[in-house]
Image 1 (tube, helix red, strand yellow):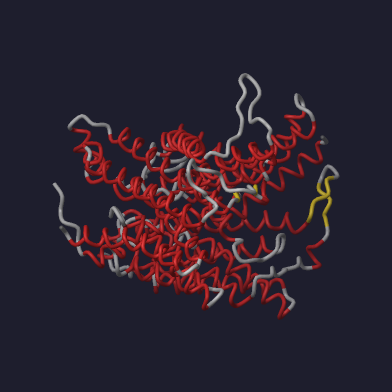
Image 2: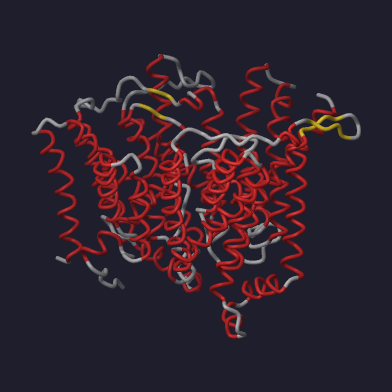
Length: 306
Length: 327
């Protein structure tokens, strides 16, 4: 095992973590502000990926594809917020889970209806296609490096938005006490629509960024949704900072676990047994991480309330 | 007799009459459909104990459904290849006997439910939902990546397991067996609800502080309810595997958890026969709408949305009206 390979795996873990953060931050924002569990968040991720793939196929421009993913996911988010989600804020979690489960069924089958069952492909633009040489002679795909950069920039932007802008003040106030905010003359239902659309747009962007690495297909959102759940449970539900730390932690644990565990078991097992035990354990590792963190802190790393 | 009791009798009788009619009309496919509905109803009866009586919104009951399925798959696959399951420290052979498989499936799911419950019940609300989901996913990925029992491809069992005195390959006889188990689990659920344990559990759902104030630990009540719930869902998993003669990681998938929850809610949460009505309706919709359009999940989703938003008490609630207030 060489150092180059290890650095490469750490970068892969970072890239995975950053795309998880984009999905998880919207989920945690919606939970923090509106107290809503949104299972259909993965569907918005899928909507973004499909919009990007369709736009790239029609125009050939990757930038337009990214813009389309953000616009389509934000629009889909705003529509379901006004049509359905709005009625769920006052309901208990069970109703929220069921209604958003129903939305997943509608989104998934609707997308299958529109685009068919075959996966679409979104190719990386030529300018970003090749590898770059990092200091130390490590060659790494430029596109993945750019994904890490985009994710970190958005994390910073989100931090500034929440702490420095009027919208951010309203979001934080809405989190603390919706009645008082409404009494102070803020249109709370429009604020909720904006927050929901913002979360949806982030998920849609993540879908487009990941869609260029994997294939774009129906059902791609749910594995990401569940990982995003793990991330926000680890980070503490409602905390953006928690979701960043949780996402990077999950991304690194998963990638490095898959890379290192089979080799670790090879130290005292024969080759094929080590590979199967190692990969089976690696696939469970993030859930073990989550369980461990919850035993230690039942409301996650940065969570204040259940 | 209350309206709900009459409705329950009609549901129980209808569940028996339909397959008998299909048997006379020589429609074995419809018998299999009814068997599937009855198995799903058992899974729902299990979840209802946690969800309806205990207020524990578990989105991870696929874990127990899958463990039950794999208990059957592992035991039967060793029996069909004549390889012992364990040679050391003592010999354990596989088996093709349903009663043994059921007991193993229920014990395994009970242990898993105790472990998962002990950890998950430290949290509540949204955390609990996500953690139960995550534990089921953990088992899902384990089943996919563990190659010994089929891995991602699943594990076929060539001949359905046997039950003393019955020919389980005959659809109507297998249905009779599943139906009897369904009634048995409903009886268990009714006992649980009426027992002092069930009353305390109900109280812990409504006012945990008061329960604590009279010296009962809500945590232990919930853990016991979660274990009973998982055990029954595990039994359903073993039966489901036997129905299909196939086990696959899909039994652990989060869609399975979601569907078991849908049976309970469509029928009516915390209603004794709610999961029976819900599973029957689900299977009927799947059969009827599935014939009309390949995209029947869209209609299922729309219906579910309407039930959640407007018809809050499910089928049993709509037909039988508000439940009489107890205690």
